[in-house]
Image (cartoon, rainbow, N blue to C red; front, side):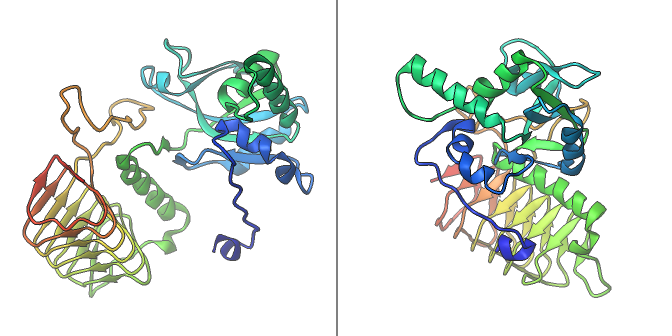
Length: 346
């Protein structure tokens, strides 16, 4: 478990209802404040990145005591910024002067990363916001939006909200294609900070190209070629002559001899038959646009057709030998009998 591995206490706190992005922390405020912490870290579950948490904490400690929240921010393109929380800051003090969540027109290219360092005093603000909501709407559900009910008022109040910008990579995880993109960057982080975690090519194989992670319990045939940007989970089995690139092979999955897997996720306990081809279309940000982020493209286009994306095999999916699965999503527990292209297999 994470608690044993890192030597830290880990607790899971479940909301009694959907309480929004701030209602949950307010509901569990007594547990969060237990031990009288100097500050607490809040990270949204649908973001990933190279978070400079130590530097962010040092910056947070350097701010006036009136500061309640420090927001991690990055830069986006002008058009993409409309899909995020936008921040207008004082470039000298880094105080947030204005905050707007998903504006209809351009406000700022500086966007909220969904990572916050909060003073325990922020619960005074959430409590006041909750009382205002109860008085205004007449209900007693403790739902609060961190972005609308806390950050925007703090920015308007002045000196209570500051921003710490990062130039490291960051992405939301809103689509399946985001997992492939995130995997690539986490493997790069392994190479830079924990190279011992990556697979290394040996004289007897397999062939390793670029950044590749292979779990110690996985089995990879010496004639297979993996990489770049491949992760192989525990108990997975990779057969002879297999080629895998830009993909995730999850726990106990099997890729049989001479199969090809490109830009795809092979789910838990799934199998890809010999000489089969499982391939998707990459959904990477535009490399020619500085600060471009992943586009959260919907599943279907305006004509009702499936937008090209990575291929995802759910858990316990069986792909027979000598077929092609292209740009498709296969739901769990399916035994395929033919090739599929641009389809969702229910």
